[in-house]
Image (tube, rainbow, N blue to C red; front, top):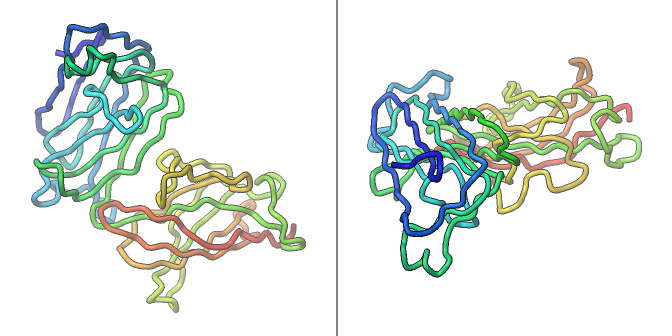
Length: 288
C-alpha cells in the first residue's frame, strides 16, 4: 500500500471502481517530502456540452499522468482506472526528494525518481493495451505545487480547439504594443467560421481577459516549446471545441465591450480533443 509517509496515498473515486498501484522496492531510502493532494476531475462531453452517456466504444481505460521526471513517470504518478464518462481521483504528490527505482538493480546503482514542485498533468482515454486513444486531455501545467488543489478536465472526443497567443500592434506605426494597459484593451474575443463556409457569419469561439494565461497550454500545441515565448505575446486562450475542419478566425480586441482592433488567423480543428495553434497576424489597434 502506498502511504503518505514515506510513500504516496492514492484515493480514487469514479463512477466505477478499480485502480492499479505500482509499489516501490523497500530496500532503499525514500526521501520524498513536501506532499500535497491533487484532485483531478473529468467530464467526457459531446460537442453540444452535454456529458456523454459512456466512454467511446472500445475505449475502456483512463490513465492519469500526474508528474514527469524528465521523460520518465514515477510509479506513484501514473494511475490507471476503468474509463467512466465522469469521475475524479485524488493523488498525493511529493514536491521534493527522491523515490528509489522499483527495480532493485537500478536502485542499488543510485537510480531513482527526483521530485520537484513543477507538475505536468493530463489524462488519456485509451484501451487495455494503451496503444490506441479516443482522446487526450490538454496538459495542465503547475508551476509550483505548494498546496492542495483541484484540476478539472472537459474532454471532447469528437472535436478539437484552436489555441491563440495574441500580440497587439499600433495601427499608426506598426510597432508592437508592450502591454494590454498601453493599448487600453481589457478583453480578447475569438470568432470563427469554417473555411469552406467563408460566406457564413462569424460565431463566438471564446473570450478571455487580455492578460489571461491559459494553464492548459503552457506548452505550444504545435511543438516542444512554451506557448508564450515572445515578449510581446501578452496572453493566451483556447477556443470552444469545434467540429473537425479548417477554420478562419478573427481575434478582436475589446475595450469596454467595443471592438478597437482585429487580427486574422487560421487553424485546423482535430478530433480526439485535439489542439492546434491559431496562426495569423497581430491584432492591430485602430487608435494607437
